[in-house]
Every structure is written in structure tokens, then in C-alpha cells.
Length: 180
Image 1 (cartoon, one colour):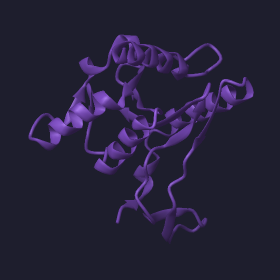
Image 2 (cartoon, helix red, strand yellow; image 1 turned 45 degrees about the vertical axis):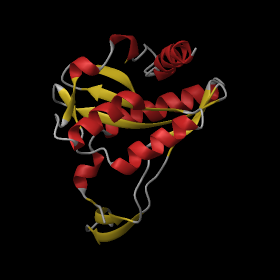
Image 3 (spheres, one colour; image 1 turned 60 degrees about the horizontal axis):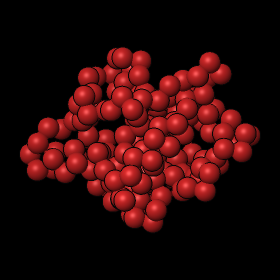
Image 4 (cartoon, helix red, strand yellow; image 1 turned 135 degrees about the vertical axis):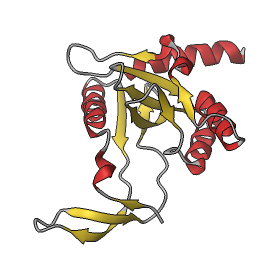
């Protein structure tokens, strides 16, 4: 059973940007995407009754789910201060869920923030799976920065929105071209 402690808030600024973006997308009729909470059971509280230690009631799948212009989407948000994205925080059940989601004609992906470079990327589940499987078979334990394609770079616009729908659209166009 997994445990949560104060390290569980890593990437929270990134998630706040995503949450702000999702609310803007909803208000503008572009998408309806929600943060999926992971059920936890508190074990330890501090003096102010804040949770300092808890365990997860069940395994989580992804951070966000919703629909954008009629297309079901699910994604996880990851942040790294390194020149690669460590695979250790991505679990087999998450990959399987995302693959199942894609098989149902949804779009599953990661949004990744490389804080070292100040850059954000859309990473399709197909690329994630390739590196995950490689790591399980003795390959590198991270996804190198070079694996993140510039065509899937996601930009924060002047209104503080991280426009991941543009990268999603590029991905869907490329996916449809390769399916033909």
C-alpha cells in the first residue's frame, strides 16, 4: 500500500497551472477536464489538523480525465528538474489504463514540465510505453529530454494558460495520418 507524505506535493504549481487552464477551457467551451482525486486514509495529523501521513486506499490511474471537442482524454502531470523524466514514478497499472483508454478511441498522454529548461511537453502514451517497457527489460530508467518532440512542446500563453489542446490536436492529426 502506498503512503503519502509532504513530498506528495511536488509539482503542485504545475498542477495549479493545469487546473487554471482546465477551468478556462471549460468556460470557453473547449473542454471539460477534471482533476481526479486519489482516495487516502489519514494516519497522522499535525497540530493544525493537516494530514502529514496517509495511505492510499487504492491505486490511482491518472491525474486528469475529461473530454475535449468530443474526444475523451486522460493524462498525468509529471515534473522533473533533471535532463530526463525518471520512470520510477510511473506504474504498470497506469500504463495499462492509458493503453486501454487509447483502444477506446480516447487520447492518453503525459504533460511533462522540464523545470531545468522551463519547457512543457505532451508525451503520447505510445512513447511512454516504449521507454517503460525498455526500463522493465534492463534499459534506461528514464525518458531522455531528446525523446520529447518539439512538435509536442506546450507553451504557456500570456493569459497563464498552458495550451495543451494544441499539442493534442497535432498528435491526433499525426495519429490519423499514420492510421490511414
